[in-house]
Length: 370
Image (tube, rainbow, N blue to C red; front, side, top):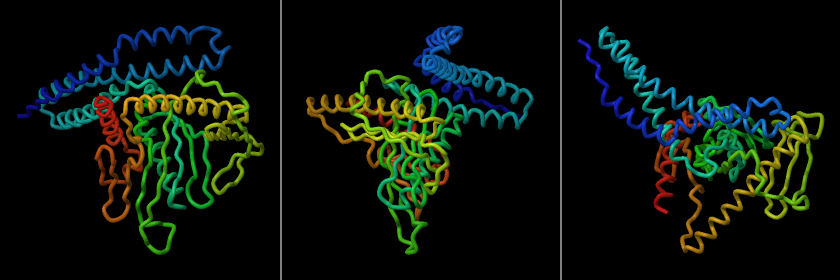
């Protein structure tokens, strides 16, 4: 006789779900959605496209967050109904379905619980990721492209919209750098733990000596700022270069010079954009990213000064944060959290959630200790 009893496991998930709902504050979310829906319904909203984009984007993010939380509650209810039917009908197929759903819900609730740890000033924003190849020649530029695909696949798995904003292709394999946007609630807070130096060790496919090659790539993650009005950049501090967008191998893909490169002379920060349709759009996008980087630099300098005054100076946690071994023992290991995977192919295919969750929990512990 079939007797499926998952009540203890479901009770534990409901307890965690209750804590999550309290932190997320469903009532506040619903109030925010009602307010933003009213603003989005104003007839002349699109007379100001920037404001309209800000309102509709915020509304979309809030609705997605509420839907995600609400759906988990409904799935828990449905699971209990499924268990009841399995026992009543003595249906082993339904029992197997219930066990599988329980496991899936455990993963989903764990991910949502991790999201509640994201309480930084910009954590709820979408993310702009820049990847730059480092030392290692063709292996490094190939590695940079592997990382870019990894994050885009991660976004695809989660059904998050992603848009490549700029790509600088290497003369040989891969890319010198790339900048892309992932538009999702808490994308910045989630992916910010991926920032730092990534290291790849493998037998190089570009050499003939079958020797192990170590190469590096840097990952930068910043929040997408609708406005960065706190940073005023004098025109004299910026050099603007206009150039022709390029594809793999340096081939031109545009008939006009629409790509834009902004150089902030006092800091040396460089931002390039080439994937918008016009030079004006590329310049506007580049300016927004530059303002964001300067705003974050300003806040980092202020935080560093406070630590110096307090006598507590520590190295940046992001440097040398993960190693990927593709020879001998196949392994991906996070050097901060100790989390590892023996399946690098799966990691490079975007299955990063376990690494990200471990990173967020590690960072939260560090913050609580400080």
